[in-house]
Image (cartoon, rainbow, N blue to C red; front, top):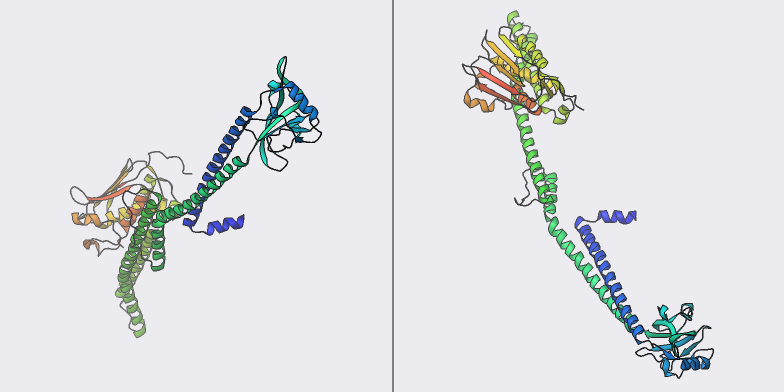
Length: 486
């Protein structure tokens, strides 16, 4: 059984579908055919039984019955009494309680008797007889009716106490009819099963044609890594294959987009790394040449050179950290999501911002708000927003920070962002032409947008009235701690 199951599972889907359709049709046809055969058999036997009961003699004169039974020998013989002749029946004979039979001269043969026939002897005429299948002494199949022998006396018709009457008709025609019917049903069933299998195979091929196209597309992608391939799908189609095809097209489109973003990220990262690495290499070469030639740099120049190397290393470290943050998968971030006190997070970020801009005046008005997010990522995003405000604020300027009802606003009084540059501020490695001389990797706001989006919120940068820029971060949450996450 296990071997057959393994062989079945090894077959192609269309072959399995064809086999299932053929099996289902075979079961249905077999059930219908057997039901039809049994119904016809029952009807034919009912007709035979009815004919037997209608043609059986109703009564025999008492004297004839007595003379017949007296003349009857111990073994079955042909009787010459026409009183036993059953109309339209081929067999007629009497059976005595000792088992001997008296056969009518008109009978086609001698019927074999059994205990059930002898049990009818002595029954009251109103109790009826029995119907059964049997054979004659030649082995021919017959339908036998055994009833009490009814005789006519001075007191009317009554059952004869010592004998029973057996009449029968051959079942040859009935059996031939049933055999012919079975043959016809078998042929029709076979044709139906074969036709169902062929139709199932054709339907499976037609139904699985989109699956074949999908398989070819998957194999093509696996072989060539070409993610531009698409499977044509009718817009009105909503079946499972169409949904699978649309899902595949969406998957390949997402993979292609992800690959493009990955390639763009690598290209942009290489471009951003080239500048600090080139500057760092130049400074290191100057220090090396100074040592090799024995002509040391002036202390002021050497100090400035080392400060530049340190700044470039810090910039490289920040850039690498930003790249690592962007490269983390959503699953890695989702594992660390928890309830975060946004007010405490903003206060911690404000402390770092004041250290980076000690000459600035940073005012804050914060109200409690609790959100679900990754604590470190959320703090880093808020720090990036504040750093952006510190970077573009003039010396001695003011930064206004507010948190109320889940809306965090950071307003600076710097030059502001031109309208044509606002759509690009959250793009990776994008930097305003005016800010390219300032330190930074161009990834800070991209990290902010990604972190806020993953927390279910949104972030917007806009020009502020009176000059400067206002950053607005909206995060869903509640003013009181929500239930702990499971």
